[in-house]
Length: 172
Picture 1 (cartoon, helix red, strand yellow):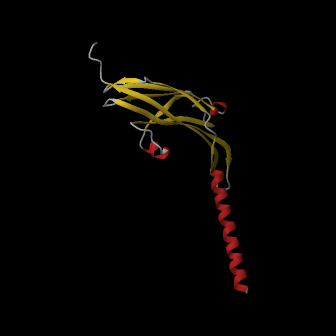
Picture 2 (spheres, rainbow, N blue to C red):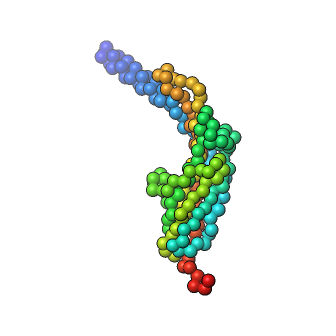
Picture 3 (tube, rainbow, N blue to C red):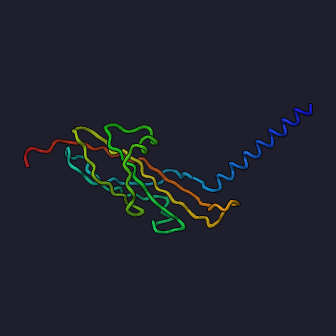
């Protein structure tokens, strides 16, 4: 009978100590996903010529603009990345899309330029990507282990642009 109580108490203490460790990890970096509150416009031709290189721009407005508008603020570090993949079909797995994509950093808090987009065959294609906008806020506090405490807020939106690729017109 005493062994059952001893096992129960040891199990209970183990569960409590595990819970405490999980809470400590969350304090260091807290990731919060805000609903997709990024509005965007892709400035890229809808019809392009095969084997010709094109550049484009994504103009965007994010809910994170209320937190930080400058990429130079050291207490509220902000950055935006456009993960771009050229494809003949839309990628269903967003993690796979990010893994196999070209990355383009933001020019400022409302614009990302992307370049050297070229298709080698005619047909219907897509510029398939994700705009990831994030802020890391220095809470100016340290935990009991001396590690800096920060708050990480991320906003993502899927960007899909249909592109028709044609042969170069014969009459110039």
